[in-house]
Length: 113
Image (cartoon, rainbow, N blue to C red):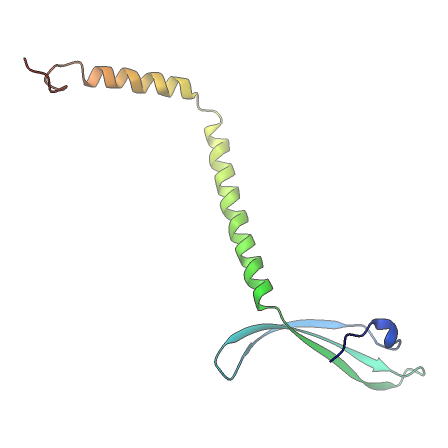
């Protein structure tokens, strides 16, 4: 099977493409893109049809992975934007104050009376 350019077939009509899920004899599911077009003579008479079948399963998997990654990145960005308004120095001071308050009693620190 060779690769041909459109110039090698000057009378090819508009190409139509569709995607199909097919199952092999072994039970493997594949996503196949089918591109088909009419081939006409110079007078416009239909001379035949030409089609190509391309396994696009891997491409679809990569596209789905990319969409998942985009969703995760958008979620992370939303969390970052939510944190943008928080004053972290106040949180740090509150944490230190709370630790000093919680452990101010010698018994809580495990020290003898």
